[in-house]
Image 1 (spheres, one colour):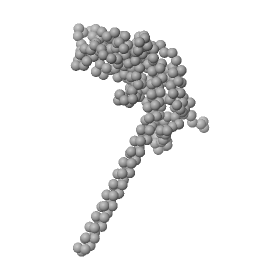
Image 2 (image 1 turned 180 degrees about the vertical axis):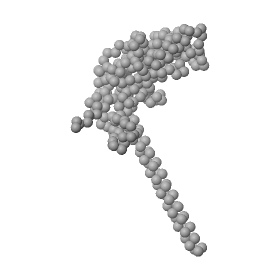
Image 3 (image 1 turned 90 degrees about the horizontal axis):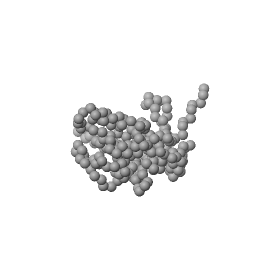
Image 4 (image 1 turned 45 degrees about the vertical axis):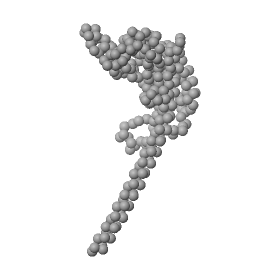
Length: 269
């Protein structure tokens, strides 16, 4: 009988554990999570995050920013299809409230930046996607099993117009309007990292650096998540023990009350 295949080495952001259907729990042992203090190293992940950054930056290499959206990353396909449906409806009718959201020079540039970033991440086996909601782009990077928020927004003050009750950037803002890309690991605008246009250095020239930093961010969030899970499990253990002690105390009080009641009944008899 051949030996079972070995598990592949853990990649950045991965749990390092395989998930199977709950029906297998009687025949497969449940693996404990990685300890929060490491070691974290695998054949693909160095122990130290600065080494991981250098490794990923070298592996990504030079990135050519997307000039068009003719070959979109799969994470943008649905958003772009939705935009095309709106475009087609606009062409059929004289007026429609549901116009394309990102047909402006700046809107198209935001999508091209995300496309470039997703393609760079895909070179390292990672992913990303985006969708539109209320006229805004909501995007995320997927590093292994770890998700991180992404946001591409205008830097500084700019002209706005009111559209359907929302203040939006003026549609004639040029594509050269300064932009910033923000990494939001917890989707809560805490512990964010950002990059932005500065002088002649545009976001498009920083895609490789941003992609490497996002991969490191995914691994960092994974490691922090292990500690948070341990702390959460400890709180649950303490709470469970507290409830057990309270239950025992309640049973003891009930036992004493039953003894007093029995004694009183005997005296009355």
